Image (cartoon, rainbow, N blue to C red; front, side):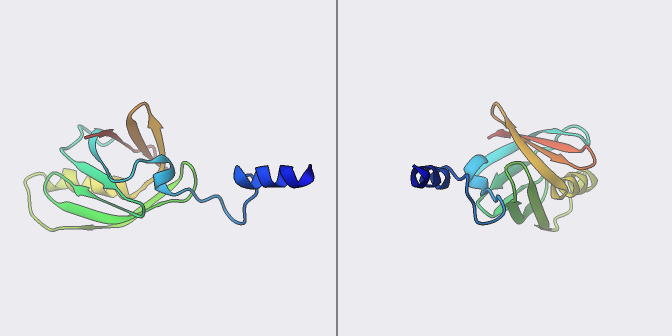
Length: 130
């Protein structure tokens, strides 16, 4: 009986050998393109984000960007550093602000079909499937 309990605990992940690390693919759909539909910094710019198993990339209003993406817990994330192309555009300050916010996001949740990213200072970015 004890052996059965141990086998069931191992099978369901109740016994682990280290910290609880969840791959983004376990909860956040990978290779899904998301459109920014909400932003605490103002009206959401025309921007897309795609998350793979260990990186994210996308297109901001003017430039392309990419960086590391790590899910360290079921709702914790780390983003960046971000690499950004250097094209100039009329509203570069808005693009710079949202990319700075994106790199400071550290929590995520999925509500219905939206991916909601949150930062420690109350900033947020809402993404919807594109």
